Image (cartoon, rainbow, N blue to C red; front, side):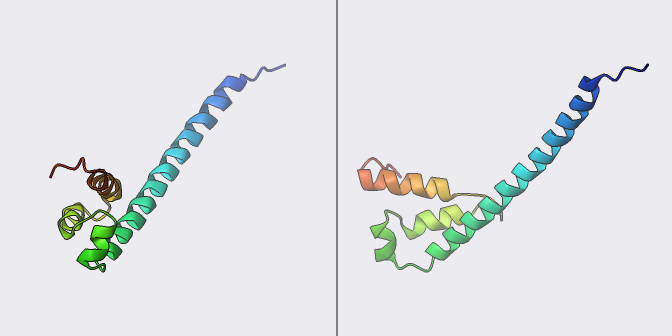
Length: 91
């Protein structure tokens, strides 16, 4: 009679699952960053008054666009707008 150690099989499965999850997480992150970047680009079509209504300036957008192709500056724009609307923004 042979004995099979199930922990060996589980360990291999966990590593494979972890690797697949890591790749999937990276790809999801990449797609999210790309979509957010496209949203920032669409904000450049707003006029200065519309940007001011949401607490941003053209300079904020230009600063956000300086990042790489897949950089996600949407959080920084949201933070800047929130601080500016609350009166706590210091450029």
